[in-house]
Amino acid sequence: MRKFLKRQMRYFFARPSVELARLWPSHFNLSVMRRLNQIQLGVEQIALILKTIKANSRCRLLIFGLGNDSPFWSTLNREGVTIFLEDNQQWFEKITKRSPHLTAFLMTYSTRRTDWKKLLDSPSSLQMALPRDVEKTKWDVILVDGPAGYGDDTPGRMKSIYAASRLAAKSADIFTHDCEREVEDAYCKYFLKNENMKVEIKHPEGWLRHYHMHDYTTLAPTTLGGEDGAWEGSGITLEPAKAVCDPMEVPR
Image (spheres, rainbow, N blue to C red):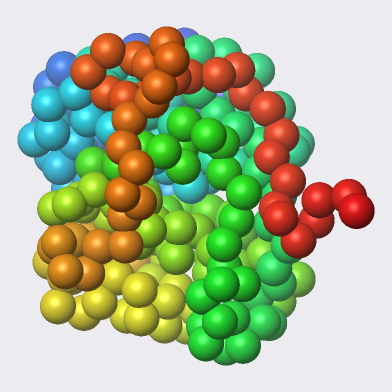
């Protein structure tokens, strides 16, 4: 009976709690929203990312990974542009079906976590095919919370952390989740640099690091903005969700 009541509460109150937390992001409202939507990030971690997004007018927000928190980030950044990159097809279909308003792209990673040491010394192997509008844009805020990196048979976050360092705008903010893990820790130190780290927030479901990038460390692309049909004020042309292959897995 208790489980049934919890499911009913989540069904009726999860979505309203997102809007409430957006309008009045108090610790209590964020905590309720987190519980009802079953979000892994801790309240303090959510609050830090929220504050950073709100500090960027018409924020360009790029998130590696779709999750239960995705509707909140999209709702919070409704005046800006938010794009999600996800590699798990079942999870992609589940989240986008439940929240069809999200702009998300299905990705493919060719890596395995066990290769992280070898790839760290070969940045050219970390290049990945990205949607055109993602590749051409400098992003104000980037959250790396995917792909999966909890086991040796998972892709690991080597490519997404490298991509974040390359796609970041000047003075961008990059958040990386699960930095207590060896791979995330090593790649953040190598590509995002310790001198750029502002804070690390520990939580039982994953540590979050906040990096504020500087001009001399950012590997952002020099090409900025869209061409024909660009979204006014952002340089982004949004396209429907689609699958994108990793260069190493394109059929020959």
